[in-house]
Length: 284
Image 1 (tube, helix red, strand yellow):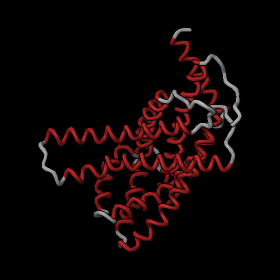
Image 2: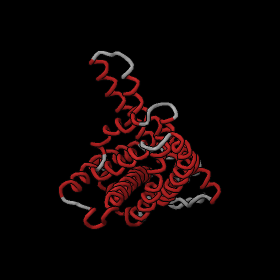
Image 3: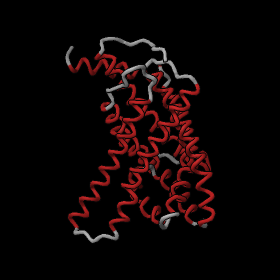
Image 4: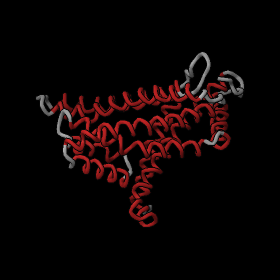
């Protein structure tokens, strides 16, 4: 089989899996729980940062994220961050406990839904409830660690550079490297999901790079297209009123979750074709 024919078969089967494995429905569940985790997660970040430095720094550095997010989504998150910063430190202290707990619960639920989606893609039965819950918690903790690395690269590094004298060339290199580090953290997070999400017996999936690259590439294009749509054509506020920005955020999270699952489907199909078969369901 030629390489072109191989790729054609892979992408055809991935396309068929979107409907057969209910990827759109699973992505909707992941997007919902991600929505629940976003704002408590923001409150936790602001509160924790406020214990060691000025929380307003986070608001200033958030401007760097503007090109990556749809306009309505960015403004909604920015407004929430500014509101949290305006609260007193005592309020932020209490917010830390509550927000961290709720954010972790919501993130765990989203990861759990994602793992079930991975099992569908790899045609594997789900784990027992306790095993599945524990695995989801461990994966959530790992992804939180990766997120903190990305946050440090984007937010903390510029703050540190303000206290260090560097020539223009060196500062430019460091600024470039921090975005490379953030992108590396994103790919590492996808690698964790793709490798440890499926309930595979024995050897874990090794084919993770194609799906990660596909997800990140299409995610960038889709985010840009969604931003252009919201700016020029879509006006969620006219249809949904005051919750229009929330709906835009939910749609963006849904699209992001769908693309992660699409990357997993690509990895699974390449692995399946390399093994010369369509694969059967495994028992956990």
